[in-house]
Amino acid sequence: MPLYEHVMIARQDLSNAQAEGLIDHFSTVLADNGGKVVEHEYWGVKTMAYKINKNRKGHYAFLKSDAPAAAVQEMERLMRLHDDVMRVLTIKVEKHAEGPSVQMQKRDERERGDRGDRGDRGDRPEGERGERRERSFGGDRRR
Image (cartoon, rainbow, N blue to C red; front, side, top):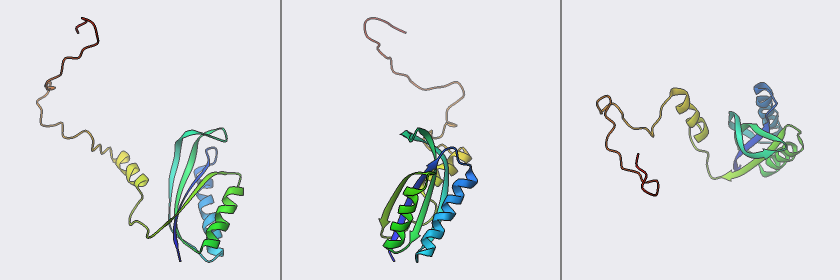
């Protein structure tokens, strides 16, 4: 059977349990039509780039499925009819990536406080900041 990945955005005023209940509901829709959800992730409430139906935020969910095309079409049809679901994206993939998605990896890094972009700051003596370039703000102003 073909492999698919789905991302769903639900309304922000749902509780976490209700949003995860939507994942279970649509998983059973796939199962009833001959498919199965291989893995699912609840990404939580995230801020969107623009408003959708007067909502700035939404509950994001990610599903990996192994299902026939008819089952996926039925699930998408029901998602689009559901009042709590704002957006759906389905992509057909050759194979599912192993391990957690990139979104879950980012969440793990934030929870641990791991900041890979700062580098090692322990090699400089305290108070020493390094050389700074002189900046020009136009005209003859000096700092």
